[in-house]
Amino acid sequence: MIMKTTRFAIWLLAIIQLVACTAKKEVQHMNSTSPISPPPEDSAVIAEYVAKHKSWQPTDYRIETMRKENDYIVYEIRYLKDETGPYDSTKSLQLGGSRSFAIYYDPVGHKVLKEMQFQ
Image: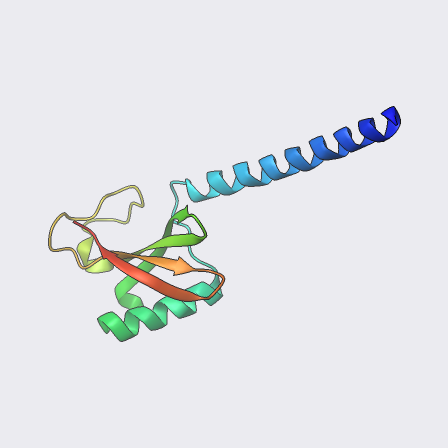
């Protein structure tokens, strides 16, 4: 009985360690200072949304991953003319009057759930 309990404890610790390492890598990836582009299937859905709701061409904007929130991903849609000077992913956008916005994206249902304007 002790042998089975010990094996189970070792197996459980290995699973916990694996999950913790995976979660840590994902958080580091999402908090990276370099821009993170969405997967191609997400990009296509987002591009379709932007074309339909903003009438922007793909050359007018850039899509960057901001963060994960619950089961959703928040993407930043940066209108390139809102930025001034050379590209710097840590640079903030101009305040007020910016055309850039964020969207909440459902990666399971592959759809944009809501749009939020920057203030």
